[in-house]
Length: 281
Image (spheres, rainbow, N blue to C red):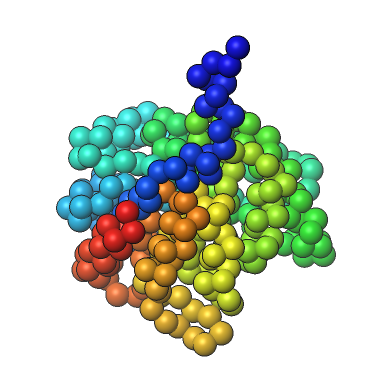
């Protein structure tokens, strides 16, 4: 007998998304306010307020400046977000997964497990992770395989906690779209996808974004990109069009990395982001 549960389990996520109208949701990446977080000018609760004041839907919490991971910090932060109507939908962590079997790999695995627990406690459904640099003397193919070997068991644990791991295109072993797609396909888990940073490719930028789009589980946009022709304004409309064509439904988070003051420079960009999300939803 085929139950409703069995029927739902048999439907691929892409098929589900294909039957839904496009929906893009504007968000703030905490890294945008890295200087303010470093100096203590802003606290993480302030980012929730900024998101609410700018009519955003969510915050991607870069964890680098968390004071700790105790309940005394995490639970009030979660409550503040709920009361403000803002979703802490993602956390962004540091990782270096290009490690062969051994103690260094075990440390990376333990780090992933730690942050999966934190994400689950905050109610975040996604974690941004880095693949890492190709170690000196190692072949790129071997390094990519090591990343997959770490992500595969971590995906099992992440799935048990309802958390998706998004491997970012962030240089090193994930410098090219082809490589990061290969890693994700090797892991072959519904709990591992790609965190698409639309400004991290330095060549064939939009071509590589389009390659990544079918595998994207979270997306970050920046004010500028830089390619073979030099710096240029990032075309968010072009990116959004690619995403919805590939049935992406989810967040577009502004990650502000320009030199001008973030507190005064981001509000116009948040408005632009809201407009783009509304246009393609």
